[in-house]
Length: 159
Image (cartoon, rainbow, N blue to C red; front, top):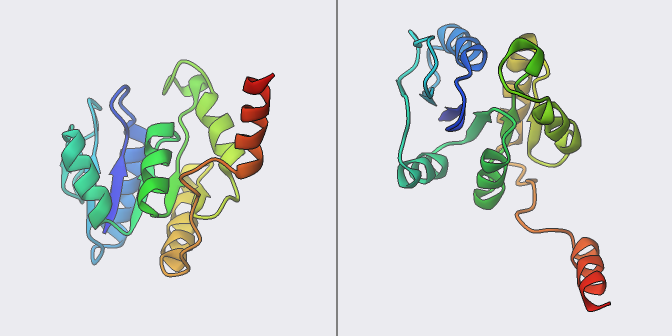
């Protein structure tokens, strides 16, 4: 299963439209989308506007791949449960967010294990294939900070 989430703060019709198009071309795939308050309603995949936090975690546990805006909540959820995630960042210029911090987040996480970035709508198909191919390789983004980073923080706090 593929779980698509736009987060809880802003609608993200571009992501939902792109995934709905993918769902139409891949009707054999099981997809569920959390679409928020967007105006685009999917025609080719089941959806809910919002899900409770407990249902969100249940869906994440059941899914093989998460496709999400580049929000840290989604990234952390994927890391905690060891699922590959495809980041589809929002663009401030397109009024999808107020800043381009999601572009920076996606750039920072690019090429990390279990993280795939679709920079544009046309990148989504390839990144879904890459994520699907990685499902069984068990290389995922770590849910904990690297030891070197933790040691530097400890050192800074001790001084």
